[in-house]
Length: 336
Ligand code: NAD
Ligand code: TDX
Image (cartoon, rainbow, N blue to C red; front, side, top):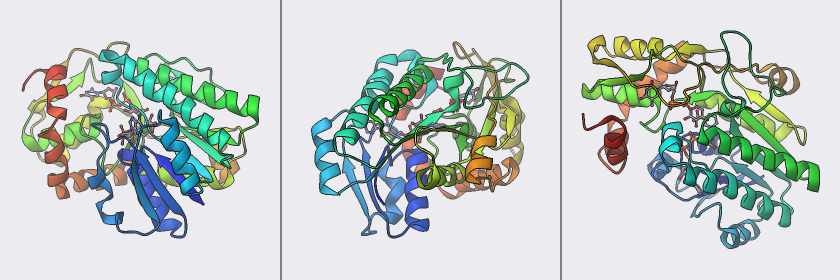
């Protein structure tokens, strides 16, 4: 395959580029990324000399550049990871979420359609389904009920992908995965923020009562699922991805603190996130039975590897935390 991977310099995208170059060494990968605050080419240092890997800095709203790149590399497959991805930022700055996640997706779909790309895969999220009560799971037929500007923009993008399938017969898939964690996770998100703050002896801001539940999946298991959908997904289908790893935020934070041998006194309950979804949980039966996917990591094995990765890659996260991200962080939590 000749793949255009948008957002390949971000957390999941860079893990996916590594995955594809390792398991499909004959494929061509063109990483197309705007390099926003979340895009980091350091994530791809070890593959930058691979002759089947190319990087292009560009915006998914730039039709002319996308046209050129798709023709130039003879792209047959588009995987769209590019997005604004942080819920808290969407609450303070919704505009850019609509511009990138909605308009960007529509532009990319249009270009893929006009260039006769074989397959378009949209990387979506379980957050489009809204929030669950104490019981039940999200299936692919759960109605979309997004609650944050972020999830509303992702749901809008999903609807456009659906429309391009129904209207133009494009070969599309949508994957909706639960919360990922693992290497290269930007330290504004719960797990890397707590690990790095604990290592720096900083406060650990837990929103509200800390009893909100997320369903966690190690990023490599997500990449393996995407790989399967690309190769075996049935056109027009949505696939939910999750590994039955529901955890309360507070339990995760306590586990991180204990693993690092730090004091639980660092944990501080802070004002809750506006519109904070209470619980997410994925029913992955469809991808398990139809495509034969199953996760290889438990939460226990994945979190151990992740904490060790942050211990081993202090240079990576210290550079990020000392830069532009700190301005946002200070606004969000005050200068602590
Ligand atoms: P991320 O924020 O780490 O990476 C996003 C990447 O997109 C960055 O490299 C950024 O530079 C790039 N980008 C942003 N705007 C762009 C634009 N206009 N044009 C081109 N590139 C642009 O995000 P992530 O956590 O890796 O998430 C990747 C995708 O997976 C997103 O679509 C997200 O909605 C989805 N997702 C994430 C999770 C999760 O837990 N992180 C779970 C399910 C789905
Ligand atoms: O400082 C914090 N304190 C805290 O209690 C942060 C950053 C988060 N939280 C809570 C909010 C959530 O309940 O932890 C939980 C996880 O928060 P995030 O890491 O911001 O993730 P979430 O909002 O669940 O969204 C993530 O998963 C789905 C990704 O950021 C999305 O891109 C993805 O679609």
